[in-house]
Image (cartoon, rainbow, N blue to C red):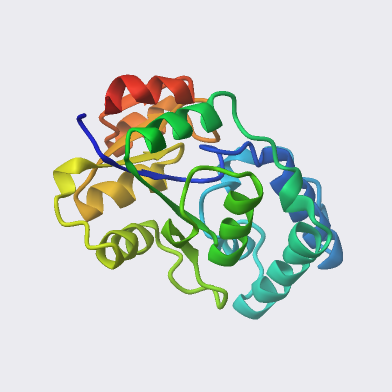
Length: 216
């Protein structure tokens, strides 16, 4: 086996969160009385920390961004929207195969860690909950490098040549590179092939099940 430790991004890699994200973001923008709350192209907005998106894309102040995030969570968590996100084809079967092969499986996402763990648990992935890492509830640890590094350090994973990151955005690939691990980009998610290649992914895959050809 080429890699025995696999770390996954969540949104755009395991689950297709584009419409869920769009709905919740538009809900928050309407609550914030943003002039035009309609989001035309949501894909570029999935991946970066959401507080950063509220500030950089929509021009809110840090305190306004915090309020916007609360509105986002109102729809996403309180109204249960996060449990309606579809899983990409082949994901569950592939993860189960890797699990049966005794791979270490983890998740590194900029999504709120508490919510990410609830999603992984509700969808019955063969991934242990304490291996799902994300942004803290107060919005800190939102950098992908930090999240990956904490996951590796907490689980005492020192042989980085044995670790592979799988994600759909530039942030996943760069975060992996900064930590010192290899990465694979998935082209069915929210990022483009160009951004994944430029970021330095060792290989691109068009379906999740292709991962087995790289890992095994």
